[in-house]
Length: 150
Image 1 (spheres, rainbow, N blue to C red):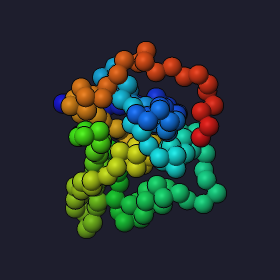
Image 2: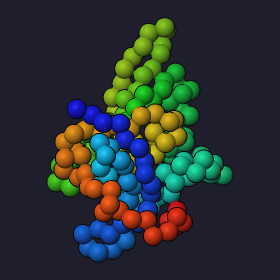
Image 3: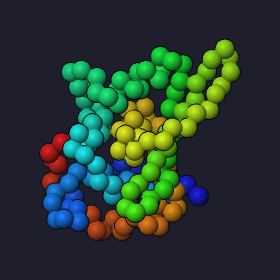
């Protein structure tokens, strides 16, 4: 089963080595799923959350524009697997050519998927298996500061 998720925030978490690493927090099924991302991905997500355009299109903005120009649309993104500490995602899209709809599925990194979903305002869904493995109680995550540095 899949559950629609919301992005609760982008911040800095502590990874297994004890260093500060950017993290995106998804809320699904009443739990928080933390996904560590690169600082570039975190910045891209935060810009989309804030609705702030970058002076030149970022990679995610460019991809969204290209998909639209080719007659396509992003329908949703799925965080659908977690194996050996690595999250896996899919982007569900559609394309219209000659009055025919073609459904497409693309393998993607969760960070790219989330950054794109924030730009096109499409659903983000997380599988039960992922929430079962990575979901944490919301009380485990406390924001010390609203300005998280991105």
